[in-house]
Length: 380
Ligand SMILES: [Zn+2]
Image (cartoon, rainbow, N blue to C red):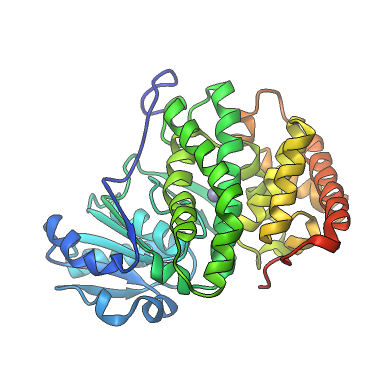
């Protein structure tokens, strides 16, 4: 995490343009024209082509490349070769977090303009200047920092609403961390992902995001289950994508994302998505930090209502023993992890205990509200 602007400077990073709305994807050609693109490389996968529609991606001069499914060093190199070989002058990433992160990792080192078209609202990847790179087997490998953000982000809410609702709920889980991590980072003032000290604009956006989720999260989930686009859906999609993206990048990360990264060391969690593991990471972070009891209850009850994990068994770890959690905690605490942005020294045994306590509290809370819980954890 290099601090480009020095540790004392504050940095706010954002995409050049953010476009969101029902049918927004029809604007892709015009945005490319504004960028002067003659030969855009369009990276997408088969599912995405179906969701978005062939003609939307059929922009003039396009070199079409199918994404292989993992944002790994090998895949980044393969797409970069296709871009160089085809003489691409712009990169367009259409799809989920890993497709977008691959597009960033190809565009930025080659100094090409970048357009991101997320087809799901499951992570805050679209607006940011970094990629999360995984091994071919799906374990977290590294962050790559590029020091610049996408030129344009186009979010078509009709496309988002047609995707399985689990994506939207996952994005809510990822976003839930944004406020807590930005809040913690604002007290320790360690460098953020944007490479400077956190600033209050980012914390304010993160706070707005948290209250948007509490207010509209359930309504948005219910609407998207019917593939409906409503003002609540627009608000939650904007929150998941823009507010969370700006909030985490310029506001700072802390324990929740490190615990997520640690969780990916256990193969049992690989069927669960980033935001689902992050949601559990938030509960464990609150345990680690000892925030007020009402905050803990508010977060866990919200997770139960909207259908996010609150226990280890919800993220594939029903049989995890203490030694498994020690593996997670060791990975979460390696040097350079954002868990060290917490305002106290964090040791792995504290993280193991926080996860055990989070799991116990989550299961207890579920038992209490079981009779009135309206929505089960989203099936996968
Ligand atoms: Zn995240």
